[in-house]
Image (cartoon, rainbow, N blue to C red; front, side, top):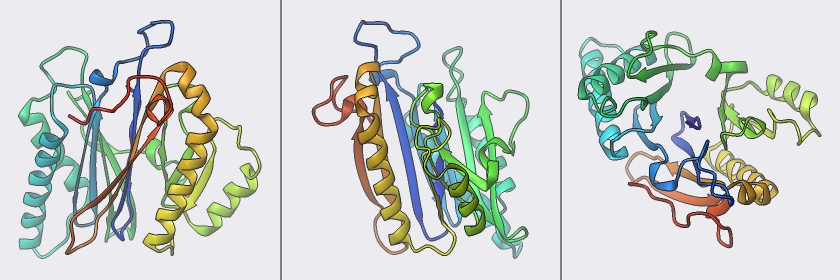
Length: 269
């Protein structure tokens, strides 16, 4: 499964990078998956907590979004009655218990869902990242170090190890950002670096503009390689603001972009 991550800025910006794979031009099916069997995704947001799931399973993404919404809303009501705010740990456990109870991923052997829960804890005054899998791999919900490396969340773009982490957005101080730029500044060929952006002291408009610019460079620079290997997908931007509908923008990359080969229109079912 190609890993999918979501991050949520505390001013309401969600980014969803959805990578889908097809067969190679030679017809080789392994390790690629067709568009119709590409993993489904779901995002739910309550307050300052973002819940995300990615996996290959027999479920509709809206079902998982509804499950997360119910779990988070119930937990928010519970802690509010006690006069405190929801922690990321509580959110992760609520989502885990609720999703596991629905038993959505056990229908086919070898399939499962990875969930990443991101939010700000008042106690720590900083971002927290938790993860879990359903079916449970034995760890249950737990703090995720791999998704918090250098305090950042990564947006992988393909299953190819050479392209796993090409663009990073996340929770990083301006000083750390400058260190990263000094370290990697002109090296756009490094497999683990493309661009770094900080959400610290940045407006929603500025962050959105940075994301759009970075994704455009990424997709244009690697589009030929994606087309040849049959790898492509859609990245989706959700803008969440109180008092108005969620605004969603979708962009194709790889074979799914206009003029590319591959399997054409992506399926969001």
